Image 1 (cartoon, rainbow, N blue to C red):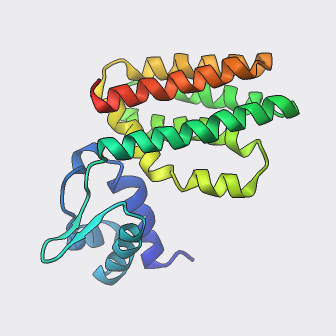
Image 2: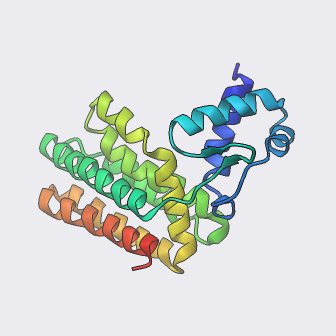
Length: 208
């Protein structure tokens, strides 16, 4: 059975931190406790965990603050994702283990999630698309490392969708280019497609 702390941690990380309207705001422990049906103690415990991951800031006498992702954080996130995802693409092509059926299903799911009301679900599937390629390498340490980027990855993705109209359609086209390169077994094209995809997202987030 999930503990109150774990329930609060999951809710805060998956729902609150990824809400564009919550960026830059302070959290109300009592409001969150009432919303998910736990006491304030597990909320505080969950906030300590999130602070340890640098996902929130605990400000004396003011509480937990969701600091917007800085330009440096966004840039470093995309750089790290690029290193991992390009490597993963090379490895699955070399081994002939590209997860094409799974990626096809995920692209179809994303296509059905058009519109701003589906932004967070769209980005959750977006992240799964990339994570599926990384997971296909079969390196458990790499998987855990990549999974550690999850919250920031979803936050950045949702903000990008809200920042630029039509970004969902662009993401679908960019994913298709990655998929096609994997299907052809063209490692150079896959690396290029991944770099272009992440580079466009970075420009949107930085307002370039």
